[in-house]
Length: 504
Image (tube, rainbow, N blue to C red; front, side):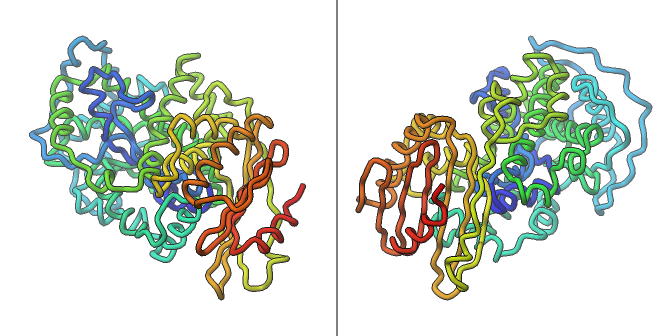
């Protein structure tokens, strides 16, 4: 979405691109790999997803809930799970000595290294991508993970950045003003990350309990898929999934993150179906039964959904492609990247339904010297839905169905936020291009219900113009053909001055 999304999700996501969470995924395993949600993989990745400003659900890879469970000695890969198709294991490559990771972690146990080698060969066979080199790998304790969260994930993200992002999210109604986003990220990443791949240092990490068991093995299958993706397509330079690129187009990055994570999630499901042992299943179920996630459970509702978007919705997108022409169709998507969360949410619209480019002028030229631009970006269909359905004010929330229907006609958008250094006041404009006037009207109807719940009684109400006066600010909503405009300003006179600069 905006730098918010970049920060919330990409700040870690770019460095990592592969944080695995087990979450509800493991429950799906217990149900015989019947997913609970249409898109939830047997193991949910947890990554700092790079999506829209608000859409940046946090970390980069959501594959399986953080596995910090204390499980018993490592399992050996021998028998496939009952009633699941067994595939002959490809001949393992000659065991190769893995370079020691640059981080000062303990040398891998020989049996764990052997299991990792075996899983790598199995993933290569299933996914069909050939490695071009070795990857440095290590196991992390939960304490080492927490240190990495602070130094790597959030190393370039300050408390001031977090306060600014929280204020922007509060402007759109997704957080309460003053929310402590920084500490949430530290605690959430520490709780939810089960493993990650760093595509800059080319290192892969798995968080372990007391060994290398079912949860760690499943995470390894997910994370090694990221290694193959990076070696085949160059995530940062070839796919343009980098911090600089994502700062200018977070909506595109959210879509790429969903492709990357959906691919790894589907691969991990196939790996478990083909190679998972009964012992893996037993250990996963034991982990799931004792697993708690108090930080995730207490996080804002929009953030929980956004955190899982690349894994759940991304897996549905990748499954759609896979159903058409196997992994060849998925590989083709890396050469014709999805461009919006709309395409991820509606895979049948990929690749033809491209987002409309919407622009906003520099409003500061007529606002005065005290107004400075704070944020500019794209909301996207996914965040449009989250604003309506998952806002901090529960009284303003619309039903899931109405919110999805209202957001579905999205064609493109742009938003900008200005702050006044002297007064602390804000101006925000969000303009959205809809696929048709009917789609614009459907969104307008939904937004008016949302705004009445959040802002109170309307002070003006006409066919194409409504407004609300709050204690500290003024909101208005306008419709012009296939365009809608949401303007927040200190007062009606300032909003009118802004509108005069926006008129088509």
